Length: 284
Image (spheres, rainbow, N blue to C red):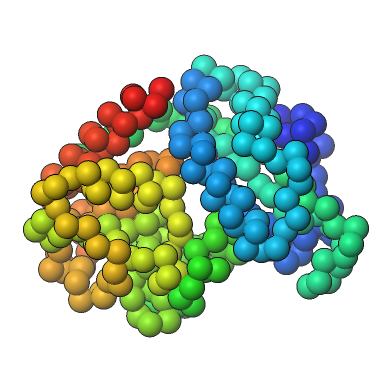
């Protein structure tokens, strides 16, 4: 079942028209959520990122779009798909409705839809036997700036970058901005570990304002044994690093195991993951 503007409909009936602005122009935003046993992980951070992104795109935010309202609609969708007592991956999509060309017509009204699917791993874990082989994706570059960091429906680089990774037997790729700085992986934010120094690209470089990125930064901020820096990362720094790891809300923390000829450990990533799970236990 799909939640379309508060009404539950079957997937066969949940069809957007070709006039939908999200389809025609990518005039839409989305949030990907992890929900376990009816608990939305980091819902407040997701909600405020969505509201901030809607303001940046100059969308008229409906008065009904409170945090409590959207949370109730998410849980209603979860329940309708028999996922209330298991783990689920949920997508909340917000678009500007229908009407207009590049300039939206006055009749265009913000709409939302929510979909849910089963997710087989309710916990954040690191599979020590898994590999994560990465390379640089250099066919296209991202312009630095906050607009590039929105979780919008314009994901062309992520799509063709994923195809490139699959064709070349990589598990992931790093995306660069026009200054040739690494900003993120195809599906998450990047952290680099070198001794007691931790680096992650700043939002101004064009990386996603990741919800899991925020959680990890908060955890690291409380660790007096490390120095955390939000600064540009050059490709030359990758082979000098002790560890690289990727973060997103669905997987949590994914250690990079190999970049070109350099292999990496995951000791620090595992420590951060343990602290993340401890934080979740306190929130539940």
